[in-house]
Length: 382
Image (cartoon, rainbow, N blue to C red; front, side, top):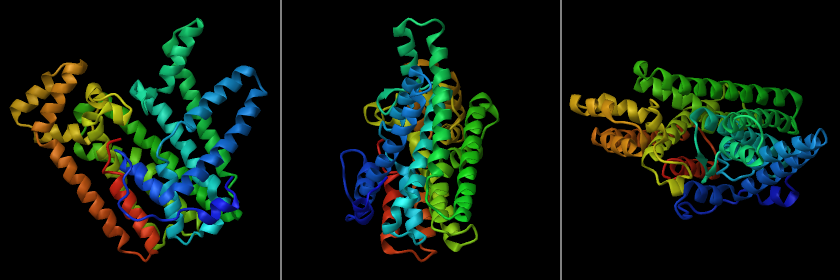
């Protein structure tokens, strides 16, 4: 847990406009949430050490399994969700001096995020994450190297699902460590449960879209972005933070957070769609064109089909699989004007988010941080 020094020094706000290499999100987080990220990671490390020890006591193999799950959680990442939750809490009157009692709740969001990432990578058959083999791929390689019986791929995917499940349970357990009055913790838990339900709903729609692309649309693709990404990345973490501070659903601040969160969250996913097709794999840490290769009906691809001329649409339908096909698809999608349209949609949503902040009275530190995070979340290369 955070010590008093962390609580006293947490989140000293730096001047706007920081830079840190090619990752503006990390730069803004370093400026606005440096001490929070450190405190969250310390909280996670301490909690997970005890959990790994407990599972090791069941069987030595369980210790290795739990350690793999722990390493997934602590492998890095921007810690975006705790950051938005923190600023939701601060904007609702949360006091920096009172940070330690709520730190477990912020850290729990990272365990929930790990659950979603690990299982999403299995569903998408992704090979890399953050520049490393995805969990199921690494586990399959380990299985094969050990000469164990059975299909390594099947083993890797099965154990990865279990790791995701364990992280979900760990998130619940860590959330319960937040030192809050029972009635408030129950309200926080309701918000947290809604976040999880919406995440599963968005993930299901994402999977369904790949199998029913002919019946998909731009509106439906945006609905996936809203529930798969916007809800648990920005909107619900902000509301989660407000609940931690005792602010309820019917407060004007909650309405502003909802409006801001949906706009920034959708923009975040639209940016991800562009990065999947046009980002540098060295920077993104993921192979390029996974969505196009799978024919996933993202907003970008749905817009390309909507905007395409008959000739362009026929060309989109004829492109084959493989890297050459993906390269041709990225050219065709850009030629339709879909990339420009998505970039305008991102800009419009950031403007909507900042307008939402203007509808409520929040302290300038919180306003500055949320403004910076909204811009950085969509002006990025990874």
